[in-house]
Length: 637
Image (cartoon, rainbow, N blue to C red; front, side, top):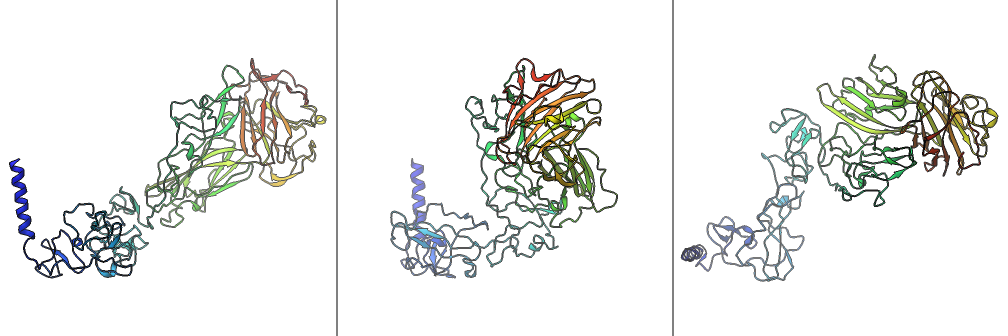
């Protein structure tokens, strides 16, 4: 206790010696903020500028300043980005030097910087507020000019030195398209990148391309929204194609019909179709040959990834190049559009990579284009599309074969032709001559209007399997031309006549890629003995309420075969039949598989068709040993 008293006595003595006595001196102070206008804090006292001793007492300016009064500021520092870092939160023991004030009133403090910089750029004077005890609070919020090595900071788009022009230091031309390179802070591993440490409102250091423009990332990212991970989505009615509990499984426990498919998204539900994120597809898996199955894995989509400098929102939080503050050399947000069956789809990489001509090395870079396989490709053991790289560089045109990848120097253009519909993930990888790599990924949809039925089987080339389509109310037989079905005998796209189902002709592409007038319905591809070729039937313009049936006939051969039927409505895959479990007993002619009944709902572009597959709980898919009658008026056909 004695020690504490001794310390207090010493402190009081020192205070009296430093502040006492002379009635003509200014008030005591710790900074210029504590002095009236026209005085500065010198040796603990308020005094006139350039005075070696205190001034003439506490007079001064206690009045509020109007908006057009400038004055000179005192104290405070700024980091150059509008964020005050002064010590205004320190509680001073000194009382007010200008008398009492009205609580809540705000007073403008003297500006400490060069008068010509006040209210230019981010520079501004501090303010102080009258407290409840009628005394003035401390001055806060001042922003003063900031420079580094007598030069303005670059790359942040802020007029840090408050001269009226942002990023105009001597080395700033390097950042604005010039050629002058800074002497310091250059990343020795990449001369085209500089680490500026602090950029914008972020606390992390980022690598900034040399041609970076204004870094003003004001986007507010959305946060993932997930239910508790221990829920079962089926138990709480969350059967919606989403991973609502973010446990990596979509629609866990939700019932489904054999072969049914649905769009699905395996990322946080509120990230669906945000940024680069796109739906995949999942198929109803059947076990124990029951009429009800469970959803399989969600495949073929794009889920959130770490954001990279590519002008795209890779992590799907609503902000592209989130916090990266960069000028990307590649545009992964480029819209590649959709494709149509039998029509060349050309994607020009020059619209994606180095569009600002920063590198000008598209002809010497290595381009790699990769497509995932489609719904039938695994069954066919061959891709159902052909790909080709194209470029102005002679001899590098690609081989045009059916494959999943095309790669080569200068292959900046990519051409693909699809036989079938579906959604395919396209991946682009550009490797610059210096080894730098830039990559993008998209979901490329192959869309055909109306109803499209596609057949593929695993024994093409040795077994002939035929696709049949009937229309209820019109078709009387499955396999005779007079019965008005659509199949190989009477419904080919290039035939002069075919079954009349009351639909107008349409303009579409034939299997050779020619745009021509087409009948509806029509068989675009008929395969008898060629390995890896599917079959398909189209109705471009069905009417609301029309009902169709799909059948598959084993025409010739002797091998056990596993046909697969894909049903597309308005370009969306609605079901895949025959995959799990495989069709059993389909071994010889004239076995016939009654696949599914389809009711069309909406206009020709609708994807809301209703599917009722033929199913037997004991045997699975319904396969007859002979061609059955059509029985259009029965519910069990």
